[in-house]
Image (cartoon, rainbow, N blue to C red; front, side):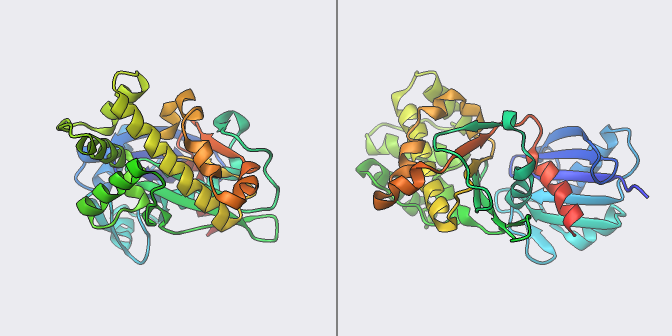
Length: 320
């Protein structure tokens, strides 16, 4: 019997929901709800279900921007906290699968269509080899796929966004110093994310003896950079892309990702053609003796109208 499904992709800023009639059916009724508008994940789910005219779901998969270990989830970049078992009982679900959002996105990669991807340098992917995935949004997600030797894939579940950030120029050293002083640890996520862009800009202002603007968010910094209105904002955005290139290159080397690197998240797709001219690709390849190794690895920006992590969440239900 077909079991209606609720699919969710929960980030630190927005929660995206969709409904699916059964395994393999079209993913429908996608709605994005701001996390800040709802007291809890359960409240957001109930709000979503109240807006669609569909049979109540019997199974659910939630891709969430957080480590998933055990029953208790406490979001890193938002205040929502919940018990998986209690949420399943409260929503009267026969099955509830909770997984990291970038693990879910990794599961969706083999199903992406060419028109959903924009290539940023490199050559052709090598079939049957590892694939890397990362992307900045509210935080920095990192995952990937490893071939299982039987024609399928094993998704990675890790927290690569929290690796230590390395600087390669004096300006970057000033930024990393600022991040270390401000947060105690200058992780990749502290620079390569929405709040990271704001902090980079603030650090550059302080380094130049200029009072940083108060109350600015990432959208204001990126808009001023893309419009050419503010050189320091443009430097901040370029530096974030350079840091992203360095971390993506590290991931490619670590995994041996001859199958390519994919960039997801909410920030890079919005940069459009500007990203193609950013320092990203040069820094991706800037690994000394291994520059030729990286030069052939393709990088794709995921540019899809529907959250691919929702499709990945559906795949996760089929793998259980």
